[in-house]
Image 1 (cartoon, rainbow over the protein chains, first blue to last red):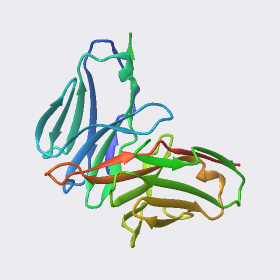
Image 2: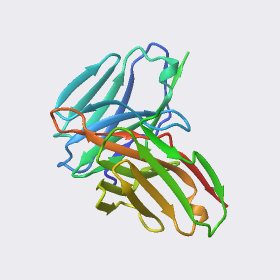
Image 3: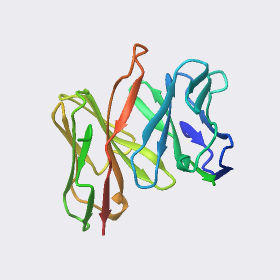
Image 4: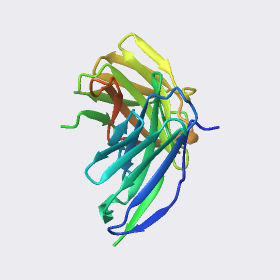
Length: 109
Length: 116
């Protein structure tokens, strides 16, 4: 079983809609959870991190963490074409970070 | 200037050649990492280092070696490159981001390596 699992997509949403990205992780001892955005051929860039159960909002982005269900999600409100990218979920456990394979999001104008 | 700089950005080489990818950072972070990214496989950890005297193997260290020459410099070597080492390589640093102690990775721009 992989440490971090994401639906690879592709996920398509119309401009202005809410995009919902999901991630599950296997190790209950995981401490911190991250969402990175990666444009094709570019490096991952941090969108948000969360370490407490519940929601964390930053502008159009909301991260949700449910440790009991071992589930992390990212909501993108008012999706824009510039949000089209691959979104990587990452988990920090001990001294290492574990990444999912990413979900490809396309926002259709 | 970028906080985490990788050189070269692109490299094409032949099977059996020795290759070094270099990484330098100006963030003052102690922790540095090398990842490779392959389509469909995500980011996988090759090696990581928490200070100059600390080197640790990651998930896929076979065929690779590293050198931490200084706090700011962390190099990845392929002693004898093979075609399945063709990938996008990322160097990253991390440090606690806030009082929570959560560490956050900051990535370099990447080095695309092609082994023919």
